[in-house]
Length: 134
Image (cartoon, rainbow, N blue to C red; front, side):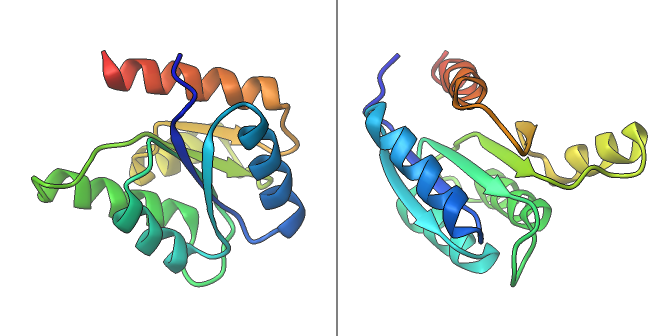
């Protein structure tokens, strides 16, 4: 897999932003970051990354909303580059049905829970990016 891809990481926790940025950079990715939902939304539209890792609990606009807005933008703007979005959350919802509904509503391509292992994140990135280019 071509790791010279650009990943946008959006998280309001500096430790997670730094950890993901460092780990992805070490694996050959170009990394851009944002610390809140509105900045992430704006940056995603401007740079059109190859992949987006999006925290759910964000100031300004939560990750579910940002994901849905980006997917609608990709559908409605013929010039918009399509890219996969993975939600990252520490928050477990009260039931699997509710969780599935929220994931479907957000239109995210994947969802992963904190704490996470970099190997798991890499597996999702590899899977979704290879599907994207297929």
